Image (cartoon, rainbow, N blue to C red; front, side):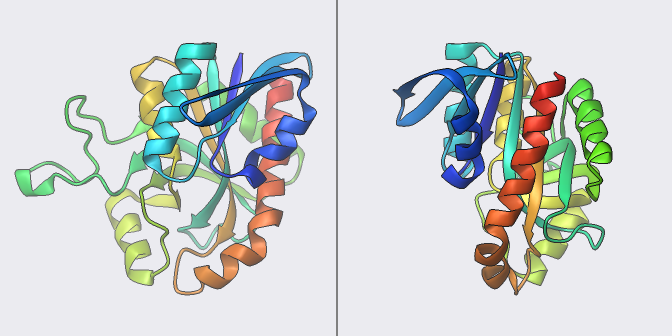
Length: 228
């Protein structure tokens, strides 16, 4: 079973439309649709925006459907000049950039209790995703994807995240899905198409390029499903 999570309808509706023998149920306000794509068992869900919704969705998906892998698909703001609108950010690991107990002497981003900052994506998923991206001639970069309950839209916010984590992209769900997958021993990957520049122009870029970026993320996710 492969789990796919996106935050918004635009990030998962194309995948839902391809599910054969589709069934669905709603748990904790989240609709889970399952069946097959390319003869692979899949379950697809729109979690909602933000880390709490994403964690609720991932934990429920794991308990209810027991996926071997979880793919988080969607869009993100770029934190590097090497990625622009439509390009792909692929997670080697994920961090929660707004987790901060540094006044107590901890590093920024440390998750207390398990003492982890970076949650590592599944190596098998990363390798296959890289193969898909190369075969389809996408410009992409692998690295740290940073999540927080903030839409990053200033140069100062962007520079702080890069300084603290050397991240390549920022969004609002991936690291909480990675955190949930980690504590449940489930492999995960975050695939994000760039929708905006995560700075002062983001409020103009994001609505303009959201659809195109979502379609790119969908294409890569679909091709990755076929390879697993």
